[in-house]
Length: 117
Length: 112
Image (cartoon, rainbow over all chains, first blue to last red; front, side):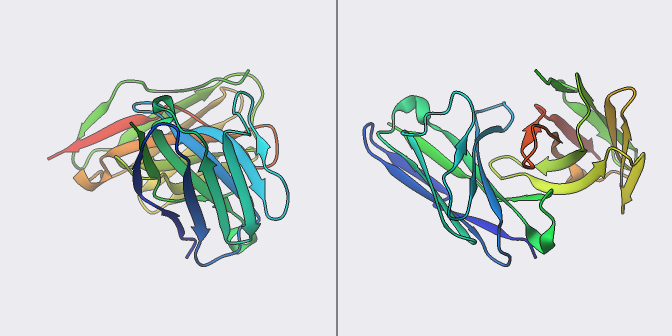
C-alpha cells in the first residue's frame, strides 16, 4: 500500500515552454501533497504544500506564478513549470500524506527528471 | 534557522557489520524525525519515524534512536548487506503542517 506515482518520469523541453508533472496517490486518499526539488548531490528542498481544493502554500523563494500547482482531487496534484529555463532543470519529486490516516508520514513518488535545453 | 547535519562523507563498511549514521540538528526539537532511503534517480522511501517522546524504535534490521538533549538521531543497520547501499536521509518536521526539512544525506556503501 501507500504507492505514489509520477508522470512523466523524465522530460526534455525547449526553453520558454511549459511542462506539467502529475502526481497520483494510487491506493489512498492524500490529504496533503508536497512538491520538492532536488539538484545533483543536494538534498530535497520543499517547494510547496497543497491541500485538495485549496491554494498551494509556497516556500520562501519559490515563485508561485512560475510553479503552478493544482490539487483537484484527493489523489491527484499537478505541478506546471511555466516558461521553463535551463536553471529549472532539476529532479522534481512529489509526496503524499494521509495514508491509513497518518498525516505525519509522507510517501514519495519516483521523481521526474526535467531537462530544459 | 534550523540546520540539519548528516555525515557528509560516504560511509563504507563490510558486509555483515553494523552501519551507524548520524543526524544532528540545531535549535528547537521537532515533534518527530524520519529516516528515508534514496537510490540514485529515485524518490525517497520511508523507513522509520520516531517521535520526540520516544528514545528508540526498531524495524527488522533497522534501529533509530532520538536524543532530544543532544539534538541527535542515530540510524543503525545491523547485519548490513550490499543491497543496503544507498543514500540515507533524515528529515525533521518543522514549522507545523507536517512539512519536512531534509538533511543532505549520507551515502552508505556495503562491500563484500
